Image 1 (cartoon, rainbow, N blue to C red):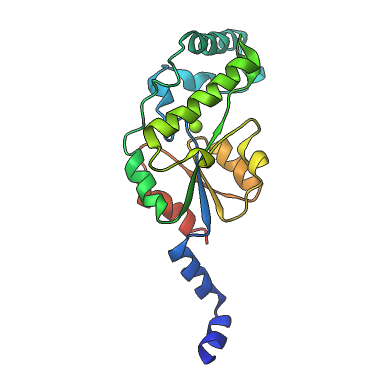
Image 2 (cartoon, helix red, strand yellow):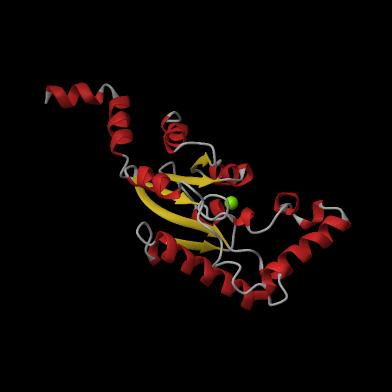
Length: 199
Ligand SMILES: [Mg+2]
């Protein structure tokens, strides 16, 4: 009883216990650029990864061609390689919570095939995860959303997003979640530190 009373006076100790255990956390991994090496399939895509309205007419045309070239290659999505270090990263994160894939499907308006092709992409992404990372994610742990991730998931402080785009992290955090910015050179340990420091 004295011990409980003592603990109640030091709430931060509950946080340390919680942080070490961490099983209450749900950890969501972006797919392209975090698990799947999308950029290795298409050179120079970074320049085009902006809303079309903000691009010059030339870049806008290039962006259209970029997506249509992908659409022409039926095997594009299934051929994307796994990013080196993915298995090690997921094994590390597994100790801290329940793992999910959270990928935003590209908008149907990008494609000649419209919604039908967008559905094909979502299905290909799901198959990709099951094929390459099925030992970490079953079908129920793969989420392909159409809205921005924070708006789609309505996260809490126990929901962690690992994403390679700062704007996605920002959007996630603005909806109440916590984010980890992924880069290929960041070790899993450094990634974990990004969230344990925030507690
Ligand atoms: Mg990404």
